[in-house]
Length: 160
Picture (tube, rainbow, N blue to C red):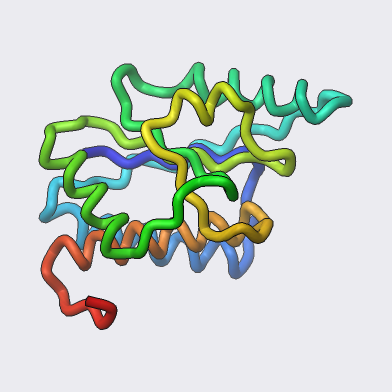
């Protein structure tokens, strides 16, 4: 299953980009043996519209235009479920074992996601009810993808 991250906003060079890249590299290496491959990060420009509703709608359209057909769509949103790491790993494993070709994970802009994207999602996941900058969310997501691949590969996990 190919994993693609769609992120509204650009991640500039610096320690955040380096840390996210480190976890993505680890995920790529560990996930390959499990049929999980990292495809790419698609950075989408933030809308410059004057209202939040319009910005979210424009950002939704930008994400929607790029999604592969029949993809599994995971949307990160503060109102989503908060699975434990091993539960997240099992969800990924289930989709991969079912032969799903693409997994797309969407990180929203400053205003969050349009309601239609949340409705379109196969699942909505939260990294907590606090608001996180998209730079940190990217790091958290990359780390959880790596952690999920190590759990699925049978590496000891101290929380089991």
